[in-house]
Length: 243
View (cartoon, rainbow, N blue to C red):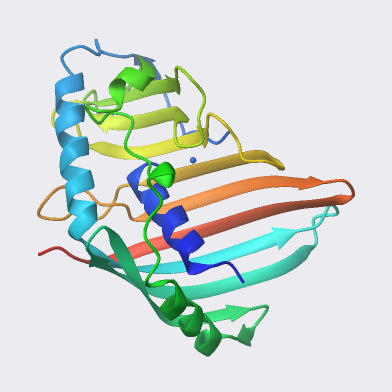
């Protein structure tokens, strides 16, 4: 069973960013607007989002399926968790957890308790690419404008120097506010034995401090020698509490 440090890192990194799947393009799109006037808005909204995430508590319903080479389901993990803000990290409360239909809630709660004393690794921290401290690490360009709503613009970005915590991808944003509406990214430097990894995020939960992540979908594959596995998962985020 995955460690809860891994669960937290994966979910929060995704919530802070997302991970070679891109946000779906809007139909009938056309050339975008200049990036210059939009970047200060994107920086401000990204700062608000990350500040909100640090103090927010929320519920995650998570389902992960892994498949063999033939496409047959090998394993199914399903659970619900309450992530509560606790200083520099979130404390994970296991509401339910199962593997292949077998209830492992008690075991999962024990693992969560064991991981509570672990300190976050600074090398694992990820941020929104539009954050003021991050923009110098990326190359940006504007893309399409949604003809159904000309305020919706697609921004493409890629890391100048590949790293595990930097990403390549795109985001649909509201050019009036700078808020991110959806995002799709892949890591600019993949982990060992990972052939492909993609994550898409939807920012569909309204809060008093701006949109929060409502859904994360991830898909990838990898392996070594004769072992190869593909996995797909989704996480639904809800019940945000922001002090």
